[in-house]
Image (cartoon, rainbow, N blue to C red; front, side, top):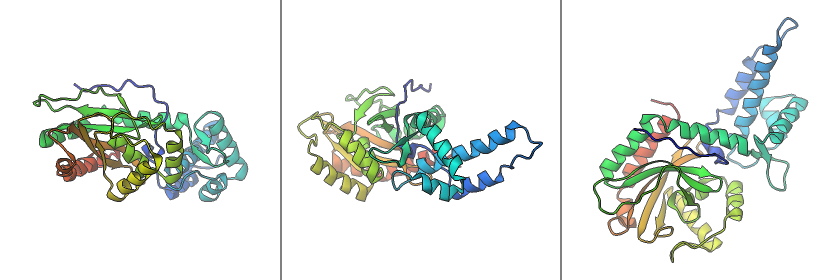
Length: 296
């Protein structure tokens, strides 16, 4: 039986939003008929809705960091007054935010709330859970899917291996820190640099084991290696005696939607053994990405 998440979503990576191609957004705006004198108010609302979604999509899909309002105006060919009015409304109501110390735009808490809800609701579909089940049967180890929420990793789904005496019990919705978990470090490594800097500045690098990285320079060096390999390891950094390996589940725009991880006691899965599962993990991550994109 599928399990529900039951979380209060606060913030999630902008990559969790499935952003449309910007040119498609412009086309969709133009395709909405301009109201005539005889048109009723619904025509005006439809066009305003199309413009609103196009603005949100441009900010959410930006891989170059915060977005300037002038870029929105130029890309979407919006009237200046309209763009500023909509942006001000989104900022006031929490759908967009200003980057710290800037006027540029980033995804706000209410929009990330929607994004997290969209991603977590897709987990109620049996398809992602079946991918996890197949992977667990293949690897004989526990696997989970996690995403970024309010500066922490949150488990969206998890399948425990059944027949091993040593098991790790985490409920769906469990949270783990970014700096010492495989999924967390993967998000830190692959998120755009401006957002990564904000996340790192907000983190308290607490020590959980004697292997936890608590020095920012050392952590940044590891993140560079993770970015290069597109795979992350937790070598007993969060829980003593536990090894974890994670790979990204990518969105349509190349940003990271979620991560897929395998986790086991170090006694039966060290880093070398985990690397032996890498191809299977990446294959399952591709399956999950296709499911999240609603592709066959």
